[in-house]
Length: 528
Image (cartoon, rainbow, N blue to C red; front, side, top):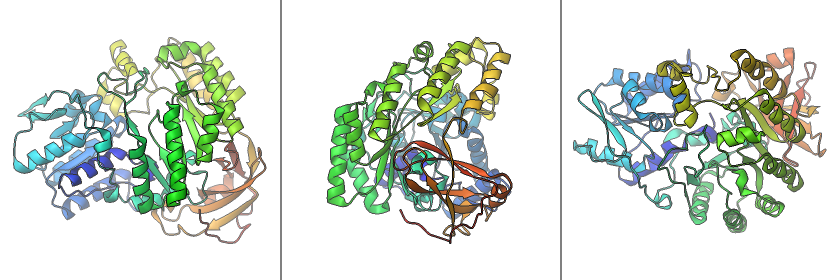
């Protein structure tokens, strides 16, 4: 796991606890080899952490997809010490508190944002005082779960301490495990060092598939000055070369984007910032060519919209508040500005039909094959309106089975017969996705890089770091792309790699043929 995928929530809670005077240590149960399984790795690391540090409280958390890991983690902690208080937070409990709390049985849970609640819990637990007046938590009254009043007002996010990743091996994630990040986040640099930043919380929109669509969750954006100060502190400490802004609506306001770009340019002059950056936003931002060129001049290499569908009927059903022409306009403007564009089309909304699927696939063929756009399916995650509808309609009949098999079971939320939906989902849509329509070019040279030899990311030496020299089929520029490969598999079957050209930022399928001589170049170690 790279830090691009590490949850920022842990780092924010760490900072809040430290500011309140508490000591925080962390266990990052990723990125280790030599274990029989992921479960064995987690068990070993959690027990080692518990034995090494005499904790007064243990925090765990994650999303609904982390259900089985969290169940195992709680079991391991209980095995070590049944009296050690366990606090659970994150989306998994925020969006389905009653079921998750009663099923996994931590001692406490935090519903919603956790900085204020975790500090209050730590203070009360350490002083053995009651917790019943802390807003936004769950606890046990003997064997009865009790939930306090929802926390309706949160602290001004500009007043929160910046996230603290120090207990979670951030340096290792930035260095050795940068290549574990999705290619979209790392393609501009041959030696990527990624940093993430969250510039806002929640969302003002209410898309049916999204977990943000909960009542009383007010959208709050940090000031640009506060964001820039976090960037300054992080750059001084970590010297990253790629910044990923994670919130979905970063540039929905053009004035905010302009203010940010001006501040970034000032930082380049004043502090020597040399990183590139990417952001996400909503199609209603209606970014124009002037705004995109301004962002590019400030170092932006990529932006994305929440695309979801190119069918007006499906977009209306999703409550997206967007139109297909907004998407095609953005794609064309991104090409003109020579900046990367991406997004996802997700199929399976209740309004989906063969006709609406065809609409989106036609749009994809016409506009998206050079951009970083992907095809997938909608999942009814807890907290979304779709999840509630699936429960009400009996599409999801067993919650425990749902959590235990999350992302492994397909749910037909359309009115199409299962046979017809599965035909689209398993045959037609995948046939057009990933590599199918992406411009392909053979790599022109391969260089072996031994800088990761012996490191965990090579999976015990099974994989090697190759630097692929690619000539972009669009702009003709040469670039080098780092890729971890299984040499034995490449020699037998060849290898295809999705990349982005760091010059024109279009999507490229870089192909290593089966008969490619894997020793074309000398060993190298490249810098950013």
